[in-house]
Amino acid sequence: MQFDILTIFPHIFDSYCDESMMKRARAQGIIAVESHDIRSATTDSHNTVDDSPYGGGPGMVLKVEPIIATLRSITRKSRSKVILLSPRGKQFTQKDAARLSLEDQLIFICGRYEGIDERVVTYIDEAYSVGPYVLSGGELPAMVIIEAVSRHIPGFLGKEDSLREETFSETVPYEYPQYTRPEFFEDMVVPEVLLSGNHAEITAWRKSQAKPITISKEKTEGKGVNE
Ligand code: SAM
Image 1 (cartoon, rainbow, N blue to C red):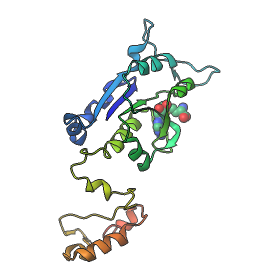
Image 2 (cartoon, rainbow, N blue to C red):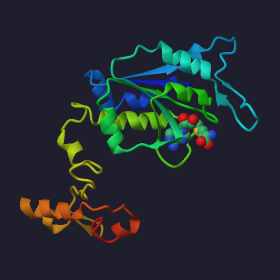
Image 3 (cartoon, rainbow, N blue to C red):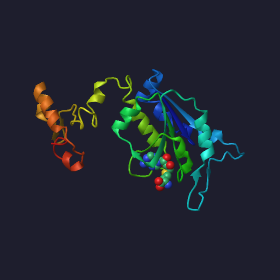
């Protein structure tokens, strides 16, 4: 899978993509991540990427021409989608991650400042928000979607089962609580059934615990999480 990111901060992804699973997947050729500096496509002497909004108002808006020139400079694969990051986009879900993982190439357009010139929308296939809040740029949302999509690409996860049993997956809509050593921590204990060695009982307990429970501090105090 080829990920291309259009941004005015092309180095912002370097550190994250050079660690852990992202690093391994890139080294193995499972994914490729390339950022494209929108500023390189400007034609004026100041390399201007933004301008004040028509009609007035605060802040600056990313200009349409350098974004579209950058987009046109990218070699497109046969299955390729252009995605805009926007708080006005559809809320991104695990289902979207699975569907998008079937593409060959995802091209992300990251806004900044007050956003992008609306005419960019003509060139996109889909627009996503990563949550009902406003961030300073589309770079973190792009990285979030890249990682969520990558986890569906064969070979990205060491063990394919880890994805199948995860929260939001088709088979297990909610993951069960997990524990590891030590057995006792302060006044909290590991549920006895997990120490029993009885696989049938463990599976039944896990199924019973795989409920739509949001982790909250109150639930964890003085006992095992979600008990
Ligand atoms: N003025 C815009 C508004 O009120 O909707 C906010 C612009 S925001 C400061 C700058 C850029 O960050 C956006 O163009 C978008 O690319 C990105 N962004 C901010 N929040 C986001 C979110 N929740 N999901 C996806 N992208 C987001």
